[in-house]
Image (tube, rainbow, N blue to C red; front, side, top):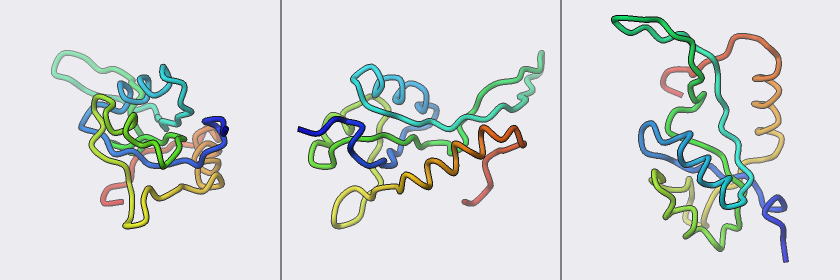
Length: 115
C-alpha cells in the first residue's frame, strides 16, 4: 500500500475564491497539498490591507492516487483535475520545488497575466 506522499503532484482546478477552502479540506482528509501564496496590498474604498493571495488563482496542487480521484472531485469548490486522455497529468517534484524556492527567496512575486 502506498502512502499519500508517495503519489505525484497533480493540479486541481477550483471555483473562484475556493483555493484556501479546498486546500484546507484536502489537508483535513490527509492529503499532501501545496497552495502557493504571495503577499499583496488590496485597496478598498475605506481601507488598505495586506493579504495573502494565490499565486495561481483558481488552482492548487495535491498528491493523490490518480486511480482514486473521486474524493478529490467531490471536494467542495473543485471544478476538475488537469488531465489528458491518459488521466491526470503529474507535475514533476522539481517544478513544485522551484515554486517553493521562489516563494522562500524573499523576492517580490505575483501572478503573471495570461499565463
